[in-house]
Length: 180
Image (cartoon, rainbow, N blue to C red):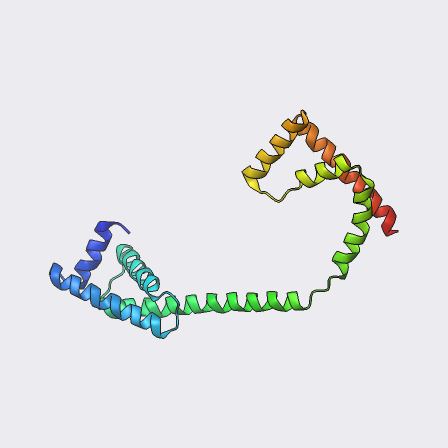
């Protein structure tokens, strides 16, 4: 929202700047109270968002005879949106908790029991290389960590990738043999 947009909004409240300021303050307090009664955790930001939406609609050409009623209407819709989003988040969270409670560690144990002996068949240097290469850093940090690893080994990053791919293939073949 630009200062000009906000100035137009204030003018729609009253042509007298002082009166427009009082009305704006009163409207903001009313909106904060409204969102507070709806149980929203941040009624101030919801009130600000309501004003922003009203300003946007007015600048788009909406004719508003009663700004207070118009903003309360926007606030009702915004409260419904926020409460629906909150319900969806709660539902997703509860489903996640249920999934964790119903989680069976058997598949993970099976994978571990197959992968561990195969990993132990690798040489100590190969084990260390895979552990360092697969370190959990992400994005630019991971690329930098792998570049430093290649530098330490005095090979190119491409040569490092090829070596790791071969080690992974070796592990995959071993796991396939054990799983049969």
